[in-house]
Image (cartoon, rainbow, N blue to C red; front, side):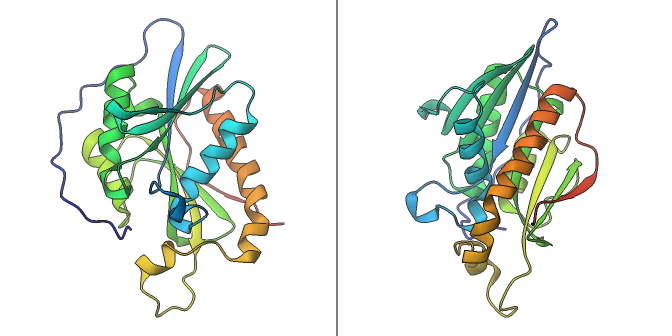
Amino acid sequence: MSLFQNRPQASDTHNYYTAAGLNKTVLIVGLGNPGKEYDLTRHNVGFHVLDQFVSKQSEMEGWIHKKDMRCHIAQGQFGDTKVFVIKPQTFMNLSGEAVQAVANFYKISPDFMAVIHDELDINFGQIRLRTGGSAAGHNGVKSVTQHMGENYGRIRVGIGPKVPEQMDSADFVLQRFSKAEQEQLPNLIKESSAIFTEYIYSGQALATETRTFLI
């Protein structure tokens, strides 16, 4: 879900192509809202994880701001696989615009794309993987699906349960992680990076599974 509701997006025709030749191209998308005020908020966990992945992987180059594609983008080479990592700079509910722009330019099929994002209905400490499925009320995912179709990987990072329960969900997701949760973020980074690496090298769609990272 997202606090930011600007305008609905019409679905586009999905004309994407698998990378040609023996090499493969993979796109990994982190969802979040741009701006320092959103750093370490629960809704920006996708941004945070990708920032750490790019900074710690020797295969990855640094971030570049691509104004025409409305995103920050980094790239790297993992064996025979070219990897693009992006953080849309459109605010959450327009994320699909940036994703589609990058996918069109680099001719990346949704079959070779994974999106990491927060999930309020999953408890903190769990990461659930799957390919396809509904947006479950998450406006960033909804926007990506409108522009790319449903057949892309989902890396869903649990941020629940909402405490206190009566708090508005939009307020909760825009809060910073608690002190106890922040102490566990290095474990989240480690597990997420392992998922990215496995996904890049496997060449397979994300299988449905649940992983835990609490210690």
